[in-house]
Length: 301
Ligand SMILES: O=P(O)(O)OC[C@H]1O[C@H](O)[C@H](O)[C@@H](O)[C@@H]1O
Image (cartoon, rainbow, N blue to C red):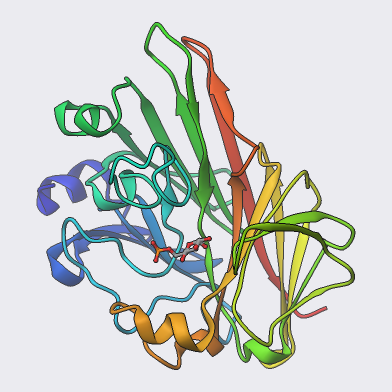
C-alpha cells in the first residue's frame, strides 16, 4: 500500500490518517470527538480503541508482539478465518486461518452523521489463498469508531458451490488484574473445555480466573460483560451472527511458552471472542453472505 496515495484517497483531515506503523505495516489512525483508534491494514486488525474519557485502552497488544509480514500480531482484534483454532483438516495449515497474516485493501473511510468514523477493509481470494483453501471468497471488515467500537466481519461466497467456515473476532481486552476479573452472561451455558481433553461442562455463575482458561461456550446469543474492578470498569459486548464465545487466558505456563507474549502479561489481558466455532459452523450458499457483528463499550457501572 502506497501511504501517500492512501492518504490522498482515504485520509480525512482532522480524523483519519494513514501512516507507516511498526514494521512498516500500514496503519490507519482515527482520532475523533469520541475516541482514538488504530487499525492495521495488514491483517485487517483493530489494534487500539481508546475513548476520550478512558484511562486505559479497551484492547491489549503484547509488548512482544511481532509486526512483521507473515506473522500474526499478538493483540487487538485478530480475524480468525476461514477456520477458528487448529487446521480442521489437519493438513498443516496455520492456526486460525490465513487472513490474519495477509495484507488487506482499504476500501472506504467515512464520517457518519453522528460524527463516528467508519473504515472498511477487504480481502479476496488469490492464488496463494486458493493453495491453502480452494474457494473464492470476499471478506470485509467494517470498523466504526464512535462512543462505542463496532466491528463487523462480512463473509461472502462469490463461488458456485457452498462453503463452510468457522471464525472469530479474537478480541484481546486490556484488564487491570485477571485474578479479580469476571465474565458475566455465560452462566448456565455449556462449554467445550480445551484445557485438557475437550470435555463438555456447564458454566455455573460468572467465569473466574485462577489458572489457564480455554473454552468454547456453545449456543449463546446473550450479551456479555467483563467486570474489571482493578481498572474500575466493565466492558459490555454485544454480538450478532455468532452463537459461540471463546474465553481464553493462557496463564503462566503458556505465557512463558509463547515467544510473542511477555511472561507476566497474562495478568493484564483476557480474550473474549465472538465466534462461530465448534459445532457453530457457517455454511454459505453460492452468492450468500454472513455478518458477524460486535459492539464493545466501556462503562463504569
Ligand atoms: O497464539 P494464537 O495462535 O494467536 O492463538 C491464541 C489462542 O486463541 C484461542 O483463544 C484459542 O482457543 C487458544 O487455543 C489459542 O491459544
